Picture 1 (cartoon, rainbow, N blue to C red):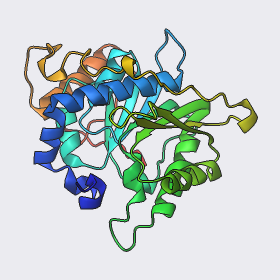
Picture 2: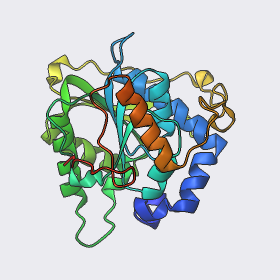
Picture 3: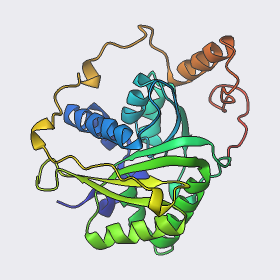
Length: 276
C-alpha cells in the first residue's frame, strides 16, 4: 500500500472526501488522541497552567480538541483547505491558519511555549514538484519554527519516517537551525504499537538536554479508553454555519474582554490583518 505522501500533495490528497473520512473514522480519532496525549507528555509543560502552543498540521482539529480540554491556548496551521473547513465547523478555541509550513513561519520571536505535530513531518520530505526541494523546505521550516519558540521550550513531532537515513536527514537540518534533542521510539519491538517522536529543544545546549524515556511496556497501550469524539456530547446545542459560528465565537471572546481576538476575515465581515 502506497504511503499517502507518495500519492498526492497534502492539499490535494485531503480533499473533501478524504478529509471527511479521516475525521469521522473512530479508529483514527482514538489513535490521534493517544499520540497527542503522548506528545503533550513529552513536551513536559508546566503543570497547572495554560501554555500557548502551535499545532503544526492541525488538520480538522482532532489534536486541537485535546489542547482545548487540557486548557491550553493554541494556533493551528494546515495546508489542506478541506481539513480546515471541517475544523472551522467544530467547537474549537484555537485560531486556524491556511499555511504551507514548507515556506516557514512569520510569527514574532518567542511567540509560543511549545509546538506539537501529529503525522505531518514526513510530508516535508516529499518533493511534490520539480521545483520543491525537501532540504530547502525543511530548513525554512525549522529555522522559522526555532525563532517562534521561547527558549527552553520543546517541539514534539510524531511522524512516520521511511528509513533511518530520513531520520538523520531531518535531524541534521533541525540541528543546523539551532535545535537539540533526538528521537524517542515508543514500543520499539512492536510492529503495531511502535511510534516515532522527534523531541526537539529550543535554546538548550546538548549538555543540558534530558531526553524523555521511551515507553516499552506494550501492555499500557490502549486506544479504547477515550470516548469517541463522534459520539461525545457537544458543548453547545445550537448549530451554526461556519460563518455564523466564527463570528459568534469572536463576539463572545470580545464581550469577555479578551485582547487577542483575531480580526474578522472576509468570511465574517471586516478585513483581517495579515499575519505574515
